[in-house]
Length: 398
Image 1: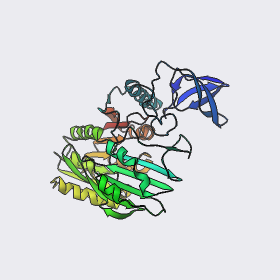
Image 2: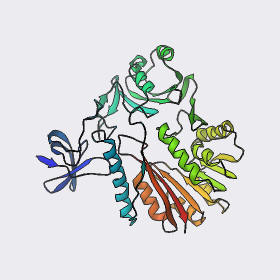
Image 3: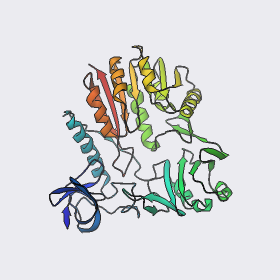
Image 4: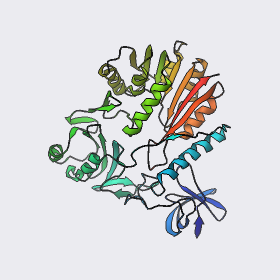
């Protein structure tokens, strides 16, 4: 049966109606008329896949990636970059309306690169084939390259079969020098990786969290700040937009005196914010990340920053009014209700909330806004060609 796609949902899937029931169809565009195969049929909704595009939408364009129709990675390569930016703004504003914020976010900072921007890729390996899973499945789509990844990563992907891995996962990370780290999770015995080392700038190989060659970290440079990043520590996947994010952090902490940087990772935001402040305290629960953060403050010649390994919830209990600014950059799951309440009880003057997941951000804002108001809100197109978007929000105490 034919379905007309009427809009996108918050995951970048097309929405239509079939037999008076909502149906979600990935890889479709509002205005498409398609026939579908039903993959999931629930009482209130269905999930389908495209069987045939009967009439393409005027918004539809040909995706430049040969794997787009099946790969579960990029969501929006079948529309223009400008339409994708509009979608991201509309998505965030729609979520904000649900918590009765009617003032729209109007700005999204564009990325100057739409392809070859990612410095990290996670590949699945099944029966010797290397690639990504299809949408909502464990069916592997073998690939030779990923267009949104660093070109040196793509060169390496083509040669990974020399490792003789049959099943597992391979993560590749790159830095500003295009140096590469290979992180392998597999029970298979590795093949001869010397050929890869001789051909590519591979500075480290880690298998099942054990270093087997080189170093288990890399050095990244953004806006002339140097950062040591362990192989399993978080770092922004888009260095071009990371630079823009750093600019925002620097601007909106310019007049802060004492900053608490929660979920600080390897210390990036706290280090950037320390430029004119008296003191920065960074808190992170991952030991390796804190080791890196303390090295990074030394790399950048800082005397006014310290980083400690601790649970955020425990630190918040000990917080005092000596902090005038908190930076929050939590994982996709957001900040727990308990920690938010503890932050609000401290009556800290300014909260800077950075989020890669609008739904949990809006959930948390619904609590924070009882005592705070939004003074600045922008989006950053950190994840080009996907439905994901980064939010940067500055909140001031009422």
